[in-house]
Length: 218
Image 1: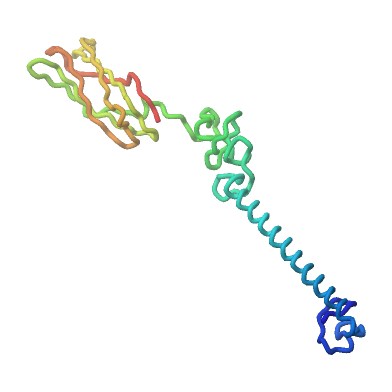
Image 2: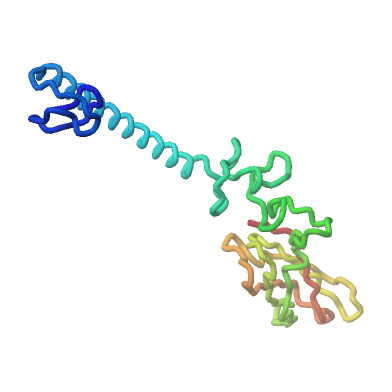
């Protein structure tokens, strides 16, 4: 049985409510039954609302973490409309939405190499692809140049075209040839590859100077 004044549950045979002192009217069972029904229904509504609120909150948190949160590590800021990173972690270059380099304001692609506050310098192929073990030999028909090319940079290079200038002892170019030192397999950072050039046999040829004609960079 419930008290009609404070709505708290009391013993069925109690004469007074032990919580508020209200006199209990045992004969008014119908009113108590309606009150009990109201209290139970009201509790169910509160529990239902609480469940909905918790569910909606969890859905919002899930969508935020996996859909709208910045993808830069543990950053909790929302990502920008057009990219995966927040404004703090997005490249400052206009219309670029790449992640900035660590401790910088631009991505690696748009890092200003001329600014003294940055140590980044775009790779120049002539500086990172080097030749070694250059050797000129002759057989019955050809003068041959063999050499090794090494990638000292941070990018992978493919379809590297190499030109050889066959010279005499005075440095005069007597003949030339070119070849793909590396093809579609690519030359990754730290890797080396051997290649060969050849021209018609000429006893005056004593050396071969090599240069990069063309390449693709991944």
